[in-house]
Amino acid sequence: MASININLGDAFLLETPPNGQHLYIAIAPTTNSKYLFVNLTTCKTGSETTCILQPNTTGMPSYVKAESAIAYQYAREMDARQLDLEICVGSRIPKCTFPIDILKKIQQGGVASKRIAPMYKRALKRFLGIL
Image (cartoon, rainbow, N blue to C red; front, side, top):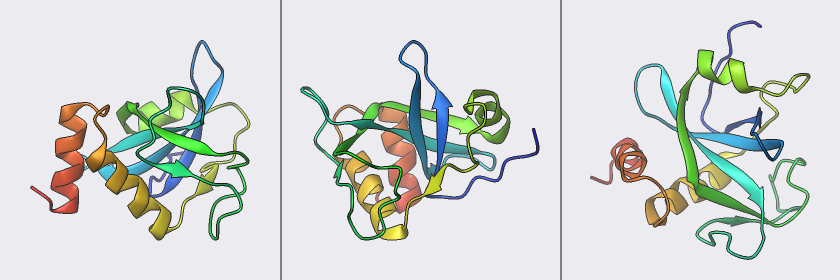
């Protein structure tokens, strides 16, 4: 596969065993080549409510078809090479891109989340200049 460009707000559909596929959104650079990604999942009982996204909201990518939560506990750091290995076969790259206003909401949710790993929260705060 060709080299993948990662831009903030880009979302990639990844293979996520054992449950199939999930959308991961790039929300902050963590190093020169790595980015922090968070997982978007359909809302259900027990979902984190720090950042809920509604379908049909202005600017919301059409991929979001149901009320969805950012599952910050599944945040992960990846570079383009790692990302390339996990993208679902046949998925458009990126699958979709979130506009800046929704990206900021997701980033602020990461700062507020009690489920995100501390090292990822620190990286996000550092990027946002909150430290």
